[in-house]
Length: 205
Image (cartoon, rainbow, N blue to C red; front, top):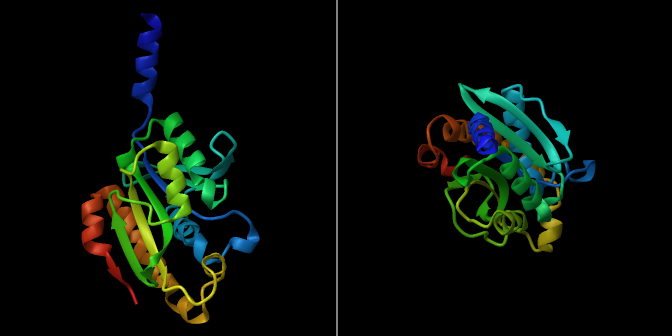
């Protein structure tokens, strides 16, 4: 009985975090590639809100916590490489009692034209290996996504395209897209995913 009381009290102390995850690959050679669009947007968000992150081996990634207008927020950069992102997300969720509806995963999307942002509540993976890994590990598709268009693909192989840097022309509009993606994250946290979808599901070029 005492154990149950202590366990219940401990669980009540857990904060109900919004969990913002940027997907990408660690390492300098991937830093500015299309596949690291999620990392790039999360970088802008953490810089804007002065969120300090540090490596947590338990979670296989860099993690930070902050209050955004009184809302407790946790951010994460998985360091498992894109195709194994789910492991890091699952362990962080379990330890912090985070529910799927509080998650927003930021990732590149080949099926959307460059400059387009699309938020959605749930759904399939679209063949995205990072999302496939998360769905497999947490055993649900019911989490929020912030999809960042990088299409259409050129004639090169898909892996070569997503692991290449943005073109010179694309780089000119990159700051505008990233700024709006950050605003979408803030609306998700402070209002709702529906409000974010209503205001930011469009092209910004």
